Image (cartoon, one colour):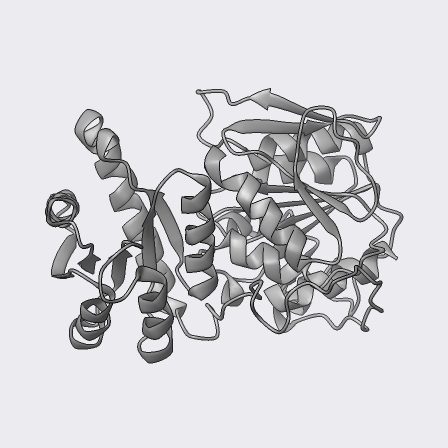
Amino acid sequence: MTVKVLVVDDSGFFRRRVSEILSADSSIQVGGTATNGREAIDQALALKPDVITMDYEMPMMDGITAVRNIMQRCPTPVLMFSSLTHEGARVTLDALDAGAVDFLPKNFEDISRNPEKVKQMLCEKVHSIARSNRRFSSAAVAPAPTAASPTAAPVSRPAAPARPAVASPAARSAAPSSSASAAPKRKAYKLVAIGTSTGGPVALQRVLTQLPGNFPAPLVLIQHMPAAFTKAFAERLDKLCRIQVKEAEDGDVLRPGLALLAPGGKQMMVDSRGVVKILPGDERLNYKPCVDITFGSAAKSYGDKVLAVVLTGMGADGREGARLLKQGGSQVWAQDEASCVIYGMPMAVVKANLADAVYGLDDIGRHLTEACQ
């Protein structure tokens, strides 16, 4: 099936180059282009593309405003282009809050220096988020709380009582031996580990903003994200959540109510003393940070005292780490297909029969609270 793409950018060079790269793939058709946000909205309504690539800085209407309008009027998967700076990270996170599905660095040097690598990455992203369109709806991409929203983080971090958990239909049908019960298994977990990729920034916001400030377990977060982005993302989460969130540093100590986000471009491991180790990213690994590596270290250090959650994302990162956790007696949950932007990573865990429970995104936070009390 051919994927129809709308390319939006105020740079004529970048529009042409992106169009050329996409058109070189026989299963992708560039259906149109736009030079600003207003044109993007008009073209989205007229062309009904499967995917939109979107720049941020444009005249007349910026990309974030355009994304919000498109999500309201004709929800369509949007791939943002962003600069690899702290400000670029902030803007990209705003775009994901507005409803964009994923992002790619806007790096002219890479286009000139590594055209084949750029082509492969861009086309893979487009195909991946096009598949998300099969279940794409305004409900699936509703923005997570932002700092300006009424549900933003309170001034203090008070504890919030947990609501009774009720298993979702997916959880009840996922694995009769372990997921049929209405409530998750309670245990004195020493660590909650959450791994995710495409769609993860919004998914993590949804989960973590439900946790009370006195959440009794430490958390580690592994989100596929460039090095320039993770610090800004951790800062954003810290403002929104009642728990504390920070980008992990070598030597950080795990403690209840603190979530440590793996830094982009590196690998994060935990040891049995509760100390975090940050290692250089291995070029032989596709993902930096890698969910499998963090999950694997948690399995070695904490045996059956880990609760791991695999959220939305393309690929299968997390499956082998989940296997190690299960072998040690720990619990593994997966996000359900209906609430995923990309049902890749959770599907890999479920298909390998490694998921103890499968929950909708909006149920995971309260289930975590209940399970760890």
